Image 1 (cartoon, rainbow, N blue to C red):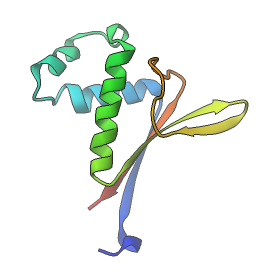
Image 2: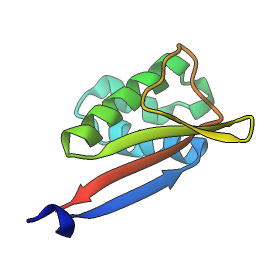
Image 3: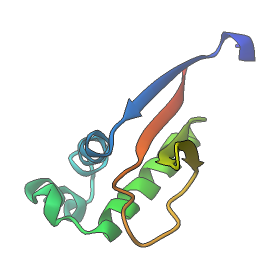
Length: 103
């Protein structure tokens, strides 16, 4: 398949939608019982550290399939792109974009 013929799927998610995606994709389907236990916990009780671990797992998963996971935020009326989370706090005001190849 030539590069010009590769189709891409793009998902744009709000912060709440992205967290829901992380839970559905990486917690509910996890082979690890420790992660599956999170499906019984309210999202508000999940720590920023856990959200960031799930995000890093998702990013590695998406990138391993030729895709990209990017966060965006508005600062002073400018859209800023973030390729990773560089703090210990969950970026609650970001929008998330997942782009992946369709084979």
